[in-house]
Image (cartoon, rainbow, N blue to C red):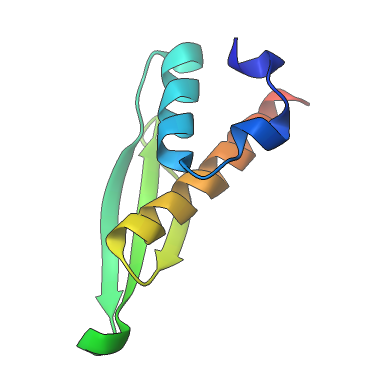
Length: 87
């Protein structure tokens, strides 16, 4: 069970996978990702990606690539979900 794992173990590098595992296990629904913005010159591009779950934007991530921005968004969303389920 994902809730029995230490928080530190859950919040390791692949946040998108962790978030998907968590949401499917507890809500029977997977999150989706939407690239919201891309800015800056080619050599210094910045991406903004939002994670959507239950028809709501849970978090927005930033990064120098779509992948890193998605990971950042997933990390923030996972932290929010775990925090809300421990209250």
